[in-house]
Length: 325
Ligand code: PBG
Image: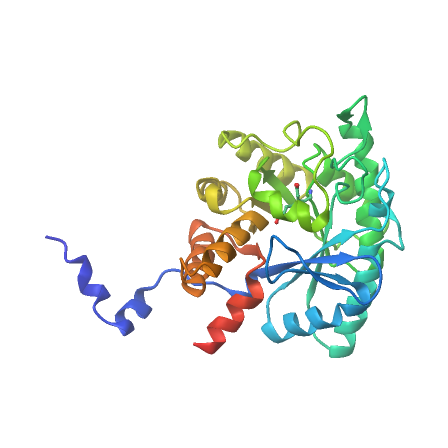
């Protein structure tokens, strides 16, 4: 008989042989920034997640500094949307404004902190798709320069990293070239490499008001039946010059995360998405699950599967709960 229980007998033994832990320096908090002034609106389907106007961002900035997580990833909600998503690459758009504000805030605090800008058109287009349309279809190549322009605007405003999330082919290269051409060769690109067309994004689309007005995203986001293809997506981003690759969503895709870990030598990120967060919040509100324990178990699973970086709405809660223990 193998007495596997022998090494589980006491806390000291268990701590000694524990293989994985959640690294708070690997956590990134997604933050929604909205137009207007003096706003802090809770997202109805995501309790504990807010949309802040730029002038109210100091509150989040303070919390993330205290927590000691890696950084935040910004999503913008513009006042006006149009066919071409021009708010995404407006030098004075919500995200560039937020970036300038936060950059200044962190400089004053004398702390280093990562400001990541999500790069996509869907929050800015009137039709809600991630690229521009031609005869009702998302036009991949025509959308690339717009993504490149959005990345450049974000970096000029102070982004330390950009993360294209639209699943356009060639978007990593288009952004890399644009940044290099403008003297930003040291700004890393995190590709949302294997991003699946998922029902788990529902609450995010409430938060960002970015649900497609017609059709769905299946012609550009991945089919969730495909694991091998996910690896091709990863390879492709790597070839285009991504510095970090990502699998998204996270919970139902840990097989893909593990396979990605075995395949790439790049740092690997997972995005623990809105629907995954909301399910836990809803069940916890009913008293059906122990939220603190569940969140720790889930975050640990991402690292165990091979992630180096976890983008999660639970980041601040998790750090606070760990400190309370
Ligand atoms: C934008 C984008 C989405 C998410 C991140 N970037 C939405 C989508 O693809 O519809 C989802 C994040 C989440 O659900 O938390 N392209």
